[in-house]
Image (cartoon, rainbow, N blue to C red; front, side):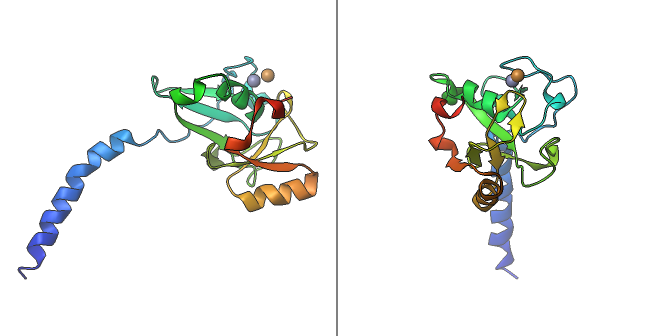
Amino acid sequence: MFKAIPIILLTFMLSACQPNSEHNAPPPPVSFHEHDECHICGMLITRYPGPKAQVFQKTSPDALKFCSTRDFFAYLLEPGMATHIQAAYVHDMAHGVWEQPSDQHLTSAKTAWYVIDHPLRGAMGPTLASFAKKEAAMSFAKEQEGKVLSYDEIGLEHLN
Ligand code: CU1
Ligand code: ZN
C-alpha cells in the first residue's frame, strides 16, 4: 500500500512536464484545399498529380504549401533555408493514387525516401516520388524505373 505513494508522485511529476513537451512538438500535417497555391510557382496545388509538400517555418503557425516535391526542394535548397524550418511533410505515395495523393498519408519529409528519374509527372513536370518507407520507394523504382535517394542526398542537380 505504501509502495503506491511514490508511483502517484511520479505520475504527477511526469504530467507536470507534459505541457512543455507538447508546446515544443512540431505541428502536425494539414490537408491541401482547392484554393491553396504553391509558395514557389503560384499554381493551384490540388489541380495537379503527384506528391505535394508543406512546410512549417519556425516563425509562423501557417503551413507553406508546394505543388510538388520538386518545388519543395527548390525552396528547401535555397542557402540557409533549412534552419528556418520547424517541420515539413510530403505525401507517402505508397497510399492513394498518383493523380490524387492522400492527405491522410503525409509523412515527415526528413525521414522520407525519394525516387528520381522515373517517368511519372508532377505539377512542374519531372518530380521526386516520396515514400515513408524505403522498401516502398525501392519497389516503385523497380516498377517505374528510377533511383532511390534519402532526404539528405538530394541536391539542386536532381531537380531539373
Ligand atoms: Cu508550378
Ligand atoms: Zn509549384
